[in-house]
Length: 309
Image 1 (cartoon, rainbow, N blue to C red):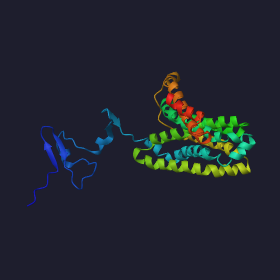
Image 2: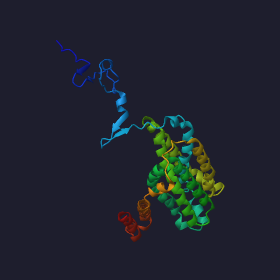
Image 3: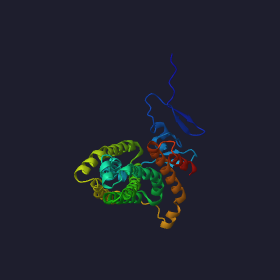
């Protein structure tokens, strides 16, 4: 004879608690059982129990469900932030096919590598700062500021009359592009529920890869037809379009009102400067190694600076 199966619930009179016994047909997040509704003071593990979690310190942390109201408008928000991501990725590869033309026009063939290096120096250095700045000043303000910097940089690249002016403008582009990529990812994580973020992040990755794949051939085509300056100038109106779309469509929840001076006091200027300088020195060393040699004094000194910082 087989023993009788265990009862579906064991009622403890002292604690008046119900402990459900799992079976092969029990759901992973069990619903409310019939017995629990009939016993006064009984408690059961339901899906609502998982609406709050505890962090390592034991503090209760609410589940991040995103912003349902904004999530319903993602079909409008996605093209706006998607255009921003496309432009930042497009600008990373747009000069690869026009180095020779740019260097010849500006009479600086020996310095053409700095066109890309100056861009990636600021692109990588300023990304960690945008996360903190977006917490202080708000996501939308930082995203719009990044668009402004990017447009100014592209305009400066198109109007540059020397290699120094072009590299400085490319550095400004990198400062803006770092905000376009990092703040956009933060905004998506704020809007979209946790269970859907992987899907939307996949869309963002597709847009980014499309921009990088389009930059080099389209930049070469523009350089051969209209001139290399138009590979930068054409991005200015597109950036303005993305700016207007985000300004009118992206309505994030209002943050707690705080005086501008109080916000500025929250910025760690010294830490930000040291972080940017350390990352820039590290990238400069990596760029100097292949051209000057890894044992060259300049390369070694560049690698020492991040350690000192």
